[in-house]
Length: 110
Image (cartoon, rainbow, N blue to C red):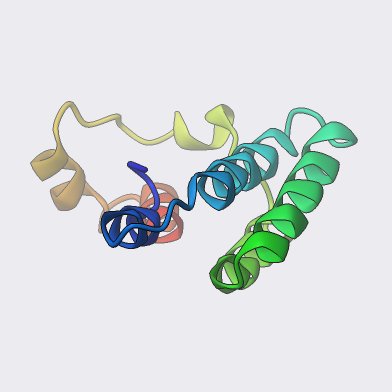
């Protein structure tokens, strides 16, 4: 429920959308795990996304973000350690202009 506010909104009106909510979390986990497990991650993400769309139609809006995430090159720790690591969020906001790698990471995270 924390990562999908649509499920919280629908659940307050009496309908329970726990299954699509869990399936959407599995989609996110499978997409993130596809970097470490190239065989298991996309299969788990695809099956759980199909299950989520089969139960409710609204998870289809996540497909473009998942496709872009899978098509983009992975961000490794080696590519982010060349820039100074700020200790707080205000420092991160000040240093993103000076470090394009961190700026690209923040832009992709938002």
